[in-house]
Image (spheres, rainbow, N blue to C red):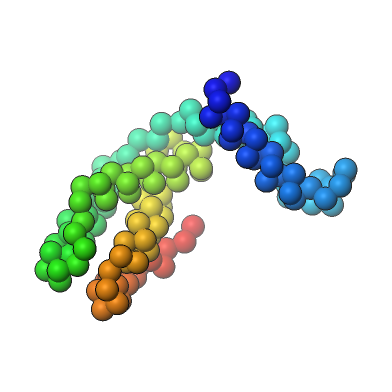
Length: 143
């Protein structure tokens, strides 16, 4: 086990310890995940390499192109190719959380939502509100 694996497991154990009030607390809180199961889940999720589908590729491409054009037109903070890279990584991470072998449209929308919410914080108020209106379907997305 690598040192990063140990850190993840220690962090998970620490979080679980905060929620366990006393011996037998899992009986009081049946929705708590046993530590061994959490460790297996994390190990399995880390091994996954979700693939981006063509439909998801198109969604990301379209979002990047329209948002970049919008930023250029309204003199907003510029958008770089790193934005697409970060949305891809977030989409893959979301797929891993769901133990999915494939990145779905839902994973991409969740990543785009997180990206847009953070991107809007870098913009002036009028631009932020315009982005909020234009991309409301993504910003209102939930699993």
